[in-house]
Each structure stands twice: as C-alpha cells, then as structure tokens.
Amino acid sequence: MGNVTSGVAAKFAFFPPEPPTYEVFRDEIDGRLVFSGLTADKKVDIHLLNTKGGNKIVATFWKHPKGKLTLLYSHGNAADLGQMQELFIELRAHLRVNIMSYDYSGYGGSSGKPSEFNTYHDIEAVFDCLKSDYGINQEDVILYGQSVGSGPTLHLASRLRSLRGVVLHSAILSGIRVLYPVKMTFWFDIFKNIDKVRNVTCPILVIHGTNDDIVDFSHGKRLWELSLEKYDPLWVEGGGHCNLETYPEYIRHLRKFINAMEKQSLSKINKRRQNAAPTITGSKNNRCLRFLKR
Image 1 (cartoon, helix red, strand yellow):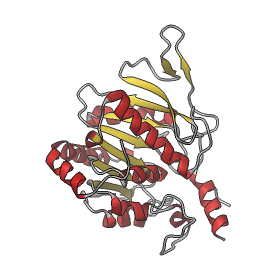
Image 2 (cartoon, rainbow, N blue to C red):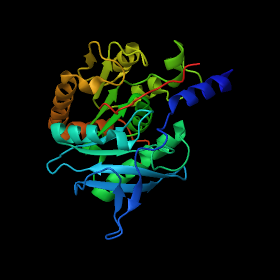
Image 3 (spheres, rainbow, N blue to C red):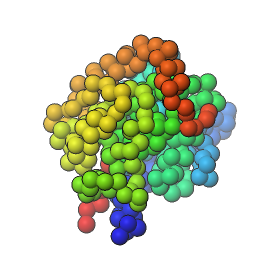
C-alpha cells in the first residue's frame, strides 16, 4: 500500500510544461548563455549547473543594482522559468532584491527526470552557485517556496542555521496530506514539510489563500503554528492557489517582510548559528500546482 500511495503522490507532484516554454543556447558572438524570449538585460545571468543527481539544470540570476538580499525562489509544479519571467521582473522591482530561480530536473531546459530527491539536489546546486559565483552567503538569502517548491525550500532551510528568512507560499504539509487528511507521517510520504519546518531557525512568513481548493488553507495554518520563529502570516481572504500575486496585500506584506529582514541584526543571526550547529556545508502564467483527476 505504501509504495502505491507514494507513487500516486509522486505522479501528482510534477507536471512540467510540455513543450518547455523557452530554450537556452549560447550566443554566437560572446558565447554567453541566452534565454529565449528574454529581452536583452545585462542584469540577468543564465546558468547551467551540475547537480549531485547527475543532471544539468537551468538557473537565472536577476540582479537588482541596490539589492541587499537575494530571494532563492522555488516555483510550483506546473510552471517553468519561461512562465515566471514577468513575476520575477515585478518582484525585483517592488522588493529591491536579487532573485535566483531555477528549473527542477526534467523541467524547461533542465535535464533528467523530476523527483523529490532531485529537487533537493537541484536547490543545493543553486545555493552553491550563489556562494561561488556571486559571493552571497546564507546570511543574505531568503528562501522562497511556492506550493511544491516548499519541499526543496524546507529541505535546505532545515539544514542551514544563518539564513535571513523563509517564505512559504501556498505550501504543503506533505505530499500525502494533499491527497488524504492523515494525522501521522508515513515513511513513504514525500516532501515531509510538517517535520522539517520544526528545524528551521530563521523567521518564517507563511502566505496562503483562504479559498485554496488545491492545497487546503489548513496546510498553511499548521506550518505557521509549527514555525519556531513566526512572522505575521498573510491569510489572503478569498485567495485561491495560483492567484495570490494578484491581490494588493500580497506585495505589501512581502515588502514589509523584506524590510524587516533587512533590519535584522547580524548578531541575532550569528546567535542562531551558535545555538544550533549546521548540518550542511558550505502572474497569469504562474501555474503553481495541478493534480490529475481520475
């Protein structure tokens, strides 16, 4: 029963757009990686990163000239980077942050097949790129996980002790819990966020729509309750699963959170690190989650 149920959950978790909405190729003149459909912008870098899972994934770094913090954004399960461009442009402008995002293995121009553990390898490779290519340390990173993207986000956040903050947007408690109202965590479940969120030591902002008919509002509420360092949550009245960005309170509350994280003292961050040893070194097209109805 366990293998059957976990197989069903895994199938429901990943719906990469087919065909991908973009291509990555090298410019014939300067050899730089180019992202199709993206207007020339010297503030956007394209990367092809090797992961521990043996795949090559596409990542984009959207530079803000005055950005003090960087969002590492993990998108939902039915989108790729080509569909996220407009949202990243808006977030970069309104929040005044850098944005690093990526396509999971098997999504967009990334090789391999999507799986829970590949998403963990993927986000680790992206985080390593922030450190090695841009000199950005975890103290200046906010992890942002939308829907299924909350899985790799909490995987990484639970292993780092000096992150500036975490945002959980329409997040899931676990894969099985989206399908069935179970009260305990089974070994065969995927994305066990309900357990990992308890190990996150930085401030957590939870955003969830009260009318979410894909991932029930109770998921966001419970994740907030279990957070060690709670930030004022945003419960979007009447909001669904994939439309929260269209509500004016979304960007207002997110900007408020970013401002609060910018003011957070490094001494407070260092104190968190000392108290818990790290376990790891070193829009309209925003389709965030879909399920196959049978």
